[in-house]
Image 1 (cartoon, rainbow, N blue to C red):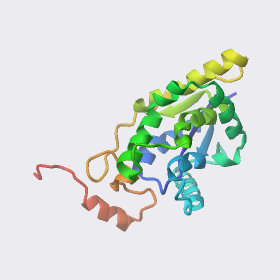
Image 2 (image 1 turned 30 degrees about the vertical axis):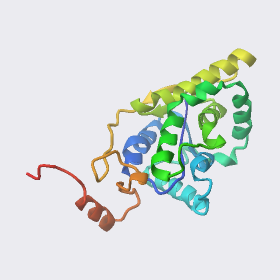
Image 3 (image 1 turned 135 degrees about the horizontal axis):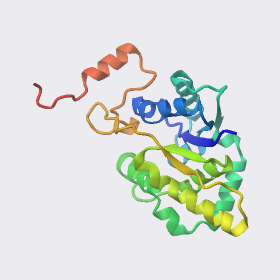
Image 4 (image 1 turned 90 degrees about the horizontal axis):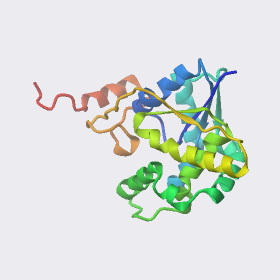
Length: 230
């Protein structure tokens, strides 16, 4: 019996080369050896885009189309929309009852997203209740599939620690129900955007997977290469 992998992405727009090289290419390889579950995390998208839902359905479709185009095979992997598994929300409620507040507040996932909101979205230093619970919902995503591994980059290992802490606490309280998911490292280096910084949609320095040849060529012509211009 194959070991189980769970991972996902928020549908916040079309995916870029950073997603492909940093995540999806690894998923394509893993689906040959593991029982893979890949989630389009639409609830997670609402934690920061709750007031911008007009494009959410199309964003979900765009993410799935990019996955398929990159080689995620629905005959080998399970692709699903997060909100269509309501048991995840139920587990999230139960987990929230046993998760100490300070565990959530120190989670790097929450800190990173709060920082993006403050600097890019102009929403100030206040975060909503849903975003505060992001790490617990993330843990529910992993635990509901009883995953053995979660593929991450080396800079994201700490993101899995809260899930392991919550799993251990739940199992200690109620019995051994869930696996303690382990991080499965990929070896991808940082993918730079057109301006030399980390590639990201919010930084407007990305190249989309679905960009045409002409669009890609125009973007490449603006990229910073050798600053000395030799």
